[in-house]
Image (cartoon, rainbow, N blue to C red; front, side):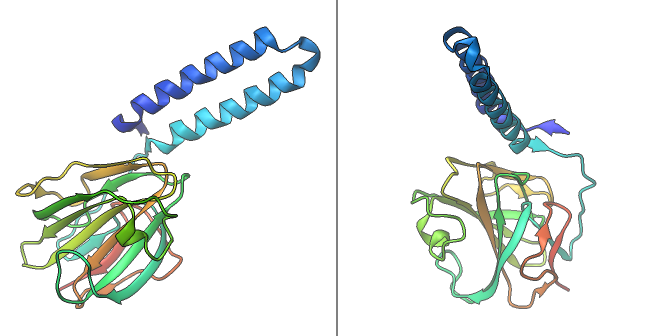
Length: 220
């Protein structure tokens, strides 16, 4: 397991806050109230552990396949439906949305290999990630991959109520490799995929997805 580079600043702040908080509790809280010091120690240790865990990159055997659309993130499949896109596409698409809790791995990966033909960041609100309007109202970053077979897949990183930064490493004209890092969203959120109508969906609502491993859809 590795720690993602996006976590270095957050982990540094968390560890230093841990040291300062517990040092101050030792200095200013009377030893008769040792249980207060213990509560602070346990609570702050748990928070540091959660933050370190949030930025983890587990060791995985990532998949690749020209006929596969892989999960772009870890989390729970919360939406599978045909939609009228609000961005880039003018035709109907199948939307598959994956919700990430703070306990999930938050590395985002390329669902397919292809040329990046669109990349756009949108400022927005921070509604809870499962809110119906979060796809269009929240802070988000959208990219579109064009596969060598001509099909296009849209991936939208969406900030949630706790997310405070969306990172995307892709630029228009770049050739993306399947399962390589697309970006990162700090502290909870979701990722939407918009797929062609002829894509054969391989997941169902409630399924737990793993980035670079779970097959979301297949095509010929």
